[in-house]
Length: 153
Image (tube, rainbow, N blue to C red; front, side, top):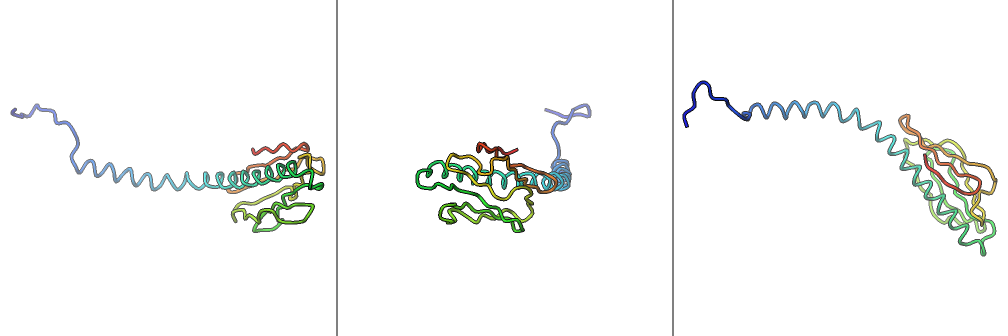
């Protein structure tokens, strides 16, 4: 088929495609780092909070499970200075069951630092305890009610 001056060309040349890909790469290299760091702070704080809440759930479970042989329960204790770390302790024997577990350095912790569960799975002090995990302006809170309900928000 013969092409004349009125023939419409379809597709892109290799040069046009390379220029578009290069432009997209430049835009992505600018946009991705700006989006990523704030999100990483939120993820790290939330992950640290969820890991801590898992230890609280384990301490509560152990307190209930071993109620017949351990009358004083279990507790999770957080160090009050950096680097923050926490341990699961058998209150009857003062034995460290698990830990210490380090919290990432850039994550700060504020709030209560001792969570003591009785053999019935309740908090020993009978008041709501909270611990906040923060990084890059993002905060995740772990709350324990007097009856032992553990939530992460």
